[in-house]
Amino acid sequence: MEAGSESPSGWDKKLSVFSCFLPGTTATYQKVFYTKKEISETSMKREGPLIDIEEKEEERVTAWMRLVHNSLLFLAGGVLYSLGGLAFPDGGAWYDSLAKPDGTPPIYLFRIIWLILYGLIAWSLLILIRTRQIDRELLLLYGINWFFHQLFFVLFIGYQLLVLAALDTILVMYSTWVLIRAIRPHHKIASSLLIPYFMWSVFAMCLAVGFCLLNL
Image (cartoon, rainbow, N blue to C red; front, top):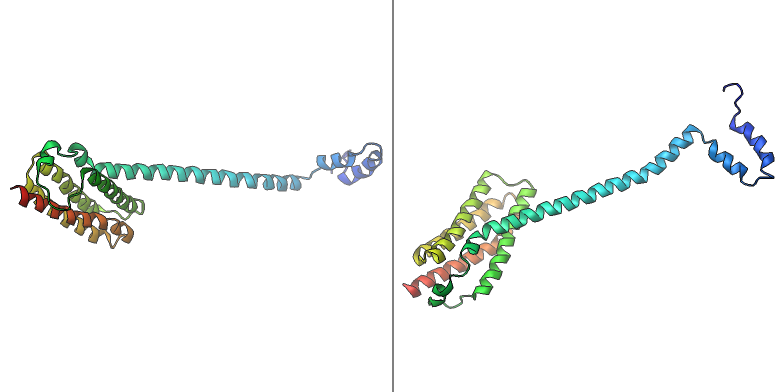
């Protein structure tokens, strides 16, 4: 210890006298004469909760960023599959003039069903992307199915080619089934999400064939 300096124990004796006249002197002294070890321990105790708060805040921001990213991918997938329907919405007077097979849903119900199916398709694709189960083969199968799906709107409503549109629905149905089987080994949930799409494709094929038979 340096000359002229007094240890905290020495100051204790001197301050004990003043504490009789100045209440709180001893407490003030104890705050001033923290050792380096005590300061270090106190700092660690104070910084610990701050670090936890910062980590939780970072996790919260990351979760929000992930949610936004997933939502954008989901919307992009849905919009991508709905391009044909957006370009050729309902067929207008020509569609109204066609003889329709039994069980043909009204236009508004078509739109609701396709909106749900587009969401399921986008969800399936999003799962594969987020779990990194997507590969070139699956992307190619998605692309083929997407192409045949868009082609139906062009053939049926755009050019009013009922026979070719009916043949196209067979390709949509088959490519959907192949896609489901291909996804199954990678992710069962992503594969199962496409089952309603396949079932609707079968129904759409029956409707398309019915339109052909009634309007040729």
